[in-house]
Length: 202
Image 1 (cartoon, helix red, strand yellow):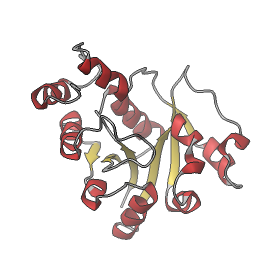
Image 2 (cartoon, rainbow, N blue to C red; image 1 turned 120 degrees about the horizontal axis):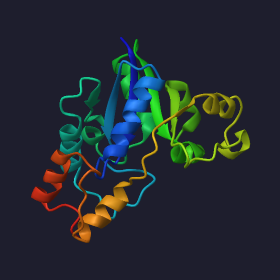
Image 3 (cartoon, rainbow, N blue to C red; image 1 turned 180 degrees about the vertical axis):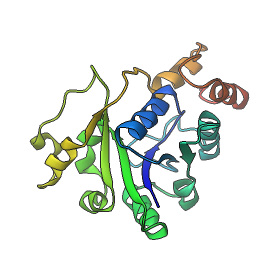
Image 4 (cartoon, rainbow, N blue to C red; image 1 turned 135 degrees about the vertical axis):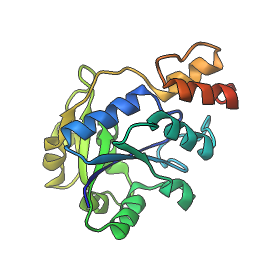
């Protein structure tokens, strides 16, 4: 039983920004731990350049090694197919009904949440915690979220500050393809895995 954060994503690859986001969620959301949940196939992103699921999972494990507050889940990869958050939250709720689930979003995902599968059901399954990047995110208005009441007000009340970190997975993939360094953008162990496996070269 605990207050458990769920941070999903492609993690293609995981980078320092993801780790800072997890840490901000832990502190600002008063979480017991954060579970990183690599998607099998993302529903809202192009699959071009998506590293194999075993590699993305391995990179997450490498990135969080030694951090007792972070865990990795294989649930979405094991389930296969397209990874819908509502299906994941249902499964987690069935397996651990006493846990308080907190689904972690970035501001970009909050703005697109109305497009997610069974979004109202999703909102009933977990508390939503949105991490704002100082200096980057313009706080949306209730009408921007395009969701029925009372959800916009509740979601905007649960926006908490994060750390400014201008890093993206797409930038890392592009730099690897161009033969440029990704040092300090990802943990050293993740960089070593990318090099050893020849990921993102094409």
